[in-house]
Image 1 (tube, rainbow, N blue to C red):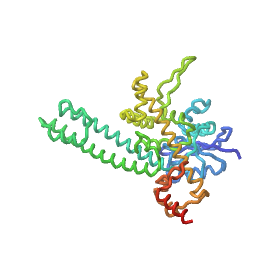
Image 2 (cartoon, one colour; image 1 turned 90 degrees about the horizontal axis):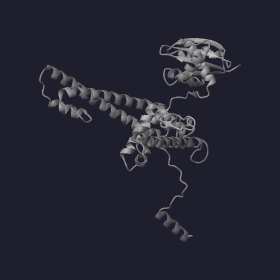
Image 3 (cartoon, one colour; image 1 turned 120 degrees about the horizontal axis):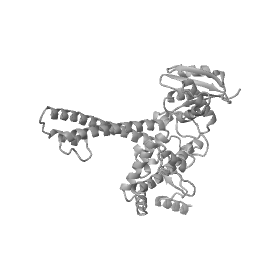
Image 4 (tube, rainbow, N blue to C red; image 1 turned 60 degrees about the horizontal axis):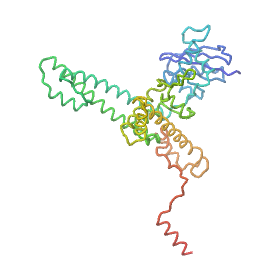
Length: 403
C-alpha cells in the first residue's frame, strides 16, 4: 500500500484532517470536535491506511495537544509551519479558497514535498523551561506596564514626577508625603496606592518565578550559566526556545535562528550585509542582554571586543552586533557539548559496558529525574594523569622498602 500523508488543520473547537496519497490524490476527509475523544476518532478513521504519517500545522501552538496525543499512540507526526501550508495554497490552481479541508490538504502537500518539516518529539525538560521562561516574561511585561502607569500618575501628584526607576517601597514613601488639595488629588493618590500594591505583588511573583527557573536550570545540568553574562533566566529561555540543538548543523545556522547573523543584500560586485530582523526575536533579546552585560563590564572579553570595534570606526549599534554573534557561537558550542555529555552515559556505563548503570530503579523513578534527567553532571574526563598526593607517595615508598 502506498504511503499516506494526513494533513491536520487544528482549531480551538475542531480539527480537520485530509488524507492524500504520494501522488497528492485526496483519499478522505474528517472533521472532529475538539474533546477527549479527538485522537481516538482520528486514529479509528485513519486505520484504513496502515502506512501513514500525520502532518499537524503548528504542532507547537493550537495543534500541540493533538500532536502529543498522536505521538503517544505510536504515530509518526510532523510539524508543518503555517507559512508552508499558505505557500501551497497560494500556488495551487484549483483549490485556492481558504477552507478547513483546503488548509488541511495544503498542510499534507507541504509535509509531503518539504524536506524541512521536523518530526514532533515528546515533551521534555525544554518545555518546562520554556513555560517558566514565558511566565517570567509575562510578569516582567505586566510589571513594566504598571510601573509606566504609576509614573504617569505620579507626574500629576508630584511636579516632575520620578526621574529614576521606580520601586514599590519608594513609591509608597512618596505617596505618604503628598499633600491632597482636593478630591481629584485624593482619587489620584488612591489609584496610585493600588498601583503600588500591584507592583509589590508582581515583584513577589517575579522572585518566586525566578527561583523556580533557577531550580529547573540547575536540574537540567546545563553549562550555559558558566558563560559570562548568561544567568538562569537567559539560560532557561535559550534551552526552552532552542529545544534539540542537533537540528542546527553548525553555529552559522544557529546564528541565523537567533537573528545574530547579518543578511547579505549584495548585487553584482557590491557586497553588503545588513541587520537581520529574522529569527527568534525573544532569543535575540536574551543574547542582547548578555551582550549588554559584557559591555558594562570592561574586563570581560565581550567588553574588550566591543571597544575594539568602536576604535575601528563602528557605530555603537554596529559594534554591539559583534559580541552578540560571538555569544551566539559560544552558546551553540556549550549546547553541543551538553548534548554530547548527555548522550555519553546512555551509550556506555562507567565500566565501559552498555547498560551498566549503578543507579537503582527506585532512584530513577524520582519525578525530577523523569523531567530533567541527571541533576548533577558527571566530571569531564581529563587527558592528564591524576596527580598523587604526598601521603600516597609516602605510602608507596614505604611499601617498596618493605618488599
